[in-house]
Amino acid sequence: NLPIVGQKIKDVGFTKDTLIVGITRNSQLFIPSGETEILEGDKLIFMGTSHSLDILAGTFFHEKEYVKSVSIIGGGNVGLMLAQSLEAVKIKTKIIEKNLDRCHCLAEKLSNTLIINGDGTDLKLLDEEDIGASDVVISVTNNDERNLLCSLLAKQLGVKRVIARVSKVLNIPLFEKVGIDIAISPKNSALNEVRNDLQENDVDILATVEQGQGEVLEIGVLPEFDGKRIMDLTLPKRAIIGVIDRKNSVIIPKGDIEIKSGDTLIIFTKAEDAQGIKEFFKVK
Picture: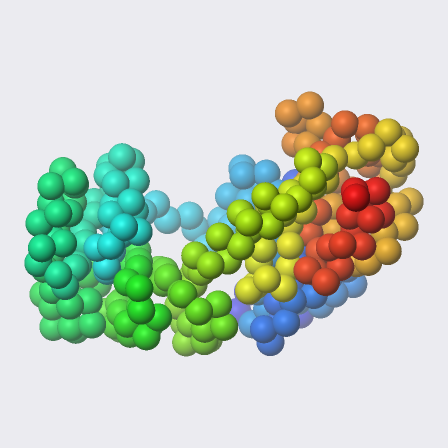
């Protein structure tokens, strides 16, 4: 029902200092142009300054909602670290953990988190503990099927935002298809770290998106590109320069912006095109 559905990107008038750098449609990622029409069900990937993205979200999508309470299902190491982080910013936190001994361990390490000994797949327990009133539920057990069930039960109880840990990357589309808001794969995160360890100093993979279909690259500009306008760069593959970091100043560029030696470019591209981008900017 958003008014942007059916419009071309160039006609929408998105918030200043934001760019649509990717669109996922029917589980397939592509790099759009200004002529691309936004369709119902599209997942839009934006780059921009933090402030501008906040304005964008409030203007076009939904009012920003501040998280005050979080329920975590699974009290392993991930659940513990999450709770510690949430305690540090004074967010009301609960953990549901099946193992009683682990609950005692959690209680010793957490000073302001409610520890509940129980099964996160028990709908009656979730209802009794008022999990439906949580702003966010995060399911981080080490079992994908359990995380999916816990997340669906949380949705059934009316939780607005549900996040699930997914061990098998191939399961992520399934989680998203059935309504899980965010599916996170620790394997993807680990892969990013390993790949960055293998990269040269001139390029980093800042992130991968959509199960590895897209990559966010950080590339330093060499002297031979100094003074060239973005619109004049004949990139060999489809890509979008989303951000220029220039002497600690962030620029969301348009085509007529000149890049300078020493700039750092944040580039969004499809994974199979990333090597061509690196070669173009003469990154070995």
